[in-house]
Structure formats: C-alpha cells, structure tokens
Image: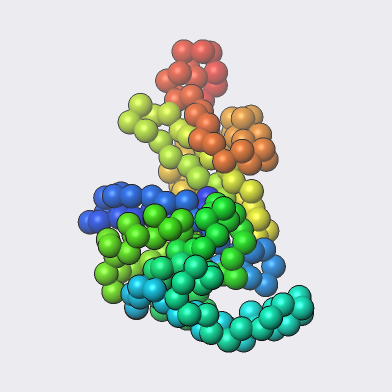
Length: 207
C-alpha cells in the first residue's frame, strides 16, 4: 500500500504490516502518480530504462541530451531493482539519487532508497497486489479510545478531508473538537492525539 501524500510504502503479509519505506512519488501537475488497484507483473535486476517518449520530449525542452535507452549502471535512474506494475506508465524501483527520497520529484513512479529497494525486491513476488491511495488526512483510534489525527499537505490539490469509510469510525465529538480543524489546516504530518470521550467527561467537556 502506497499513500501518496504520506510518501510511504507499507508492505503487508497476510494482513499484517511487515515493513514500511519512505518513497519519492510523482510531481504535482502532469506527472502525478495515479491511484488505484494494481499488481506486480515483472521483477528485474539491473534493468534497462526505456525512456518514455513523454520524458524524451521533456529532455528536449530542457536542452538536455535526449536518451532513448539507459543501460544498467550508476547513471540509470531506476537503480538496480525494478518492480513493474499493471499500471503501465509507472513502477516501483530503486534510484541513483537517494537524496530525492521522501519528495514529490518523479515522473509518476514510486522511488525507493537503494537499500530499501533491495529489501522490498526480496519480499515481493509477481502477482503481489498493490494499492495506491491518496489520503492526506489519516485517522486512527487505539484501544484506550484515543483518536489520532495526522494531516499531510494536499500536494495534488484533491481535497484534505478523510474518506467516508474513515469518517464513519470517527466519534462525532472528535470531528467537533476545535483542534480537529486546526490539525487538518496545519498539515504537520504528525499524529496528534485527541482525548477520549472519557477524558473529555473527566475534564468537564461536552459529548
């Protein structure tokens, strides 16, 4: 599962989280990473980069040398590992520019740090399902009833409110808490706890 505003990839086995990795994803504008349900269809070590025509046009506009193929090696932007998706425009891969990780800099692909690409490549098989989401606002509740809200910048401009499936699990009092709107607006990408309903009653707050 990749959540684009969060710039994180989560790897699950049997519904259990087994690893997570910071990633770089598509630039705002015409290079946004698409959302949807896909599968891994190919795995390649030391891939050749067949430069898409759209990126060749961009190279030409920028006055750069136009390349149609880039062989394996240190100059290859795909790094040493490639996971091709049923999403034909993009894939999951390593990089020769690790400083770009946790940014919105790619042409749509999901880019991993070299060491993380090694780890994920070993875990994933052809056929592994991949979900790409766009959820700037994340909500969770722990066993004590405390609700956590985490808001990320809405870089693609798609709206910052939680999806209805999430909203249905949020207590009414949490959504009416004055801090809710503040957290969503500040977009600090940090999980902030709201008190449980029991804590609110103890403090004299209304339900």
